[in-house]
Amino acid sequence: MMKYLISFCFFLILTTLDAETAKRASSQTDVYIWGTIFLALSMGSLLLIVNLFPKGEAYKAQEQRLKNLRKNMANTKPSENQNVLKTNADASSNLQTELEKTGIQTKPATVAAPVLQSTHTSVSVPETKPSIPAINPVPQQECVIINYNKVFESGTLTVETSCKDFINKLSNVVKCKSMSLYFVHNQTFSCLIEKKLELFTKYEAGKKSDLSEEILKFLKNKLGAFSSNHADAVLPLVNNNQLFGAVKIEFADPLASLDINPIWSEVKSFAKYFDQTIHYNLSVQDNETSLFTLEHFNNILNYRVSLDIPQNLSLLKILNTTDKAKTLKDISSCIKEVIGKKPEIYKLSDDLLGMFLTLEDREKISKSMGILVNLLKKNIVNIEIAFGSADYNSNIKFANKWYERATSALNTSVQEGKNNFKLFTETPPATKT
Image (cartoon, rainbow, N blue to C red):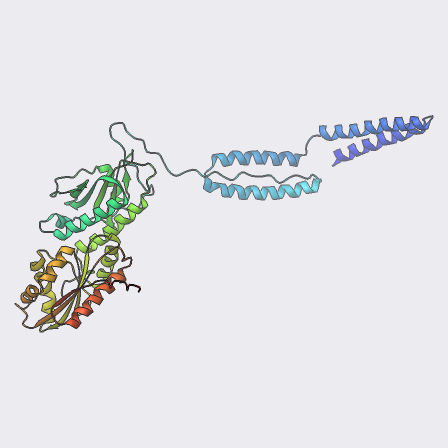
């Protein structure tokens, strides 16, 4: 404060001297000339004092704090910057109070926002063998590996059909040279079925087990893997934190910017459907009849609508029987004798069953209703049934619409009498006259 008072006194002295000199001037013109000269000297002296005057200690302290803050923020982690900013805010507040007391006005200092460092790390690619960077770099809890030995057993036509349907559907999502489905057999990932171009090849257990340990590490963590040049990808088949297989895709046109999300979605849906269908357990089977439950039927129906492939939904109603429990148990084996394989049969109510068939199997049942009833009558004297059936087509976008068509056909079959088979047919639109 004393320094500013000294400057102000020096300015007053110069002004007084200017006034005295002006009084001694002999003429009015001399007064103006000397007044202008001394005024200029006074203003120049004042500006010189202000510019050469050393900055206040508080101002210097503020600049030093800002320099230290920027230096510390560059060397500290992003999570620590919040504490640094808080400390600096408190210090700035105290400093502003101090500057106000001294009469110095300052502009608020702008502190640069901390730059967050990326948590992603690059993966080096060896020249001999490409590394497999994870699609999702965030590690997850390892899932349990479940053996699926049953899918490699002979006579599992349902498994083979389900796998082919999935591969054909996925081929419409992404162009590929080949696509393979692997399942765990005795703790080893073995290829069950592979499609190259339009040719399917089925393998026995252990005949093709070419997934590397590096890829398996990602699969165990429920992660997919790309090859370094994005020529192929391997995605896990997981349901309820249980790993039981994998899908390997060799792309026709490798793209670094490939959108993997549609492929992921299809793989996850298939994994849930396949696990519920093949991995039998009490949660999807009726305790008394071992038929699939209504809840499981709804899950499979929703999935099959998304397949967009030729298929059929048939409903079987038991109109009359002397032994309902035995009828429910025998129906599966009797249908197997007609179509040559065991279908997936769902218990929708006490007297209503549902099943998904190929168009060929639906045709066999429609032409063999007499044979099917005679097979049932071998163990049940009095038995009457009715079939209602609906083929899937591209106009069906929702599961309930497909089910409603099958129900409509079943009602028509019941009205026409016992042991009938009725296929739903769309009513042609009325022509305008």
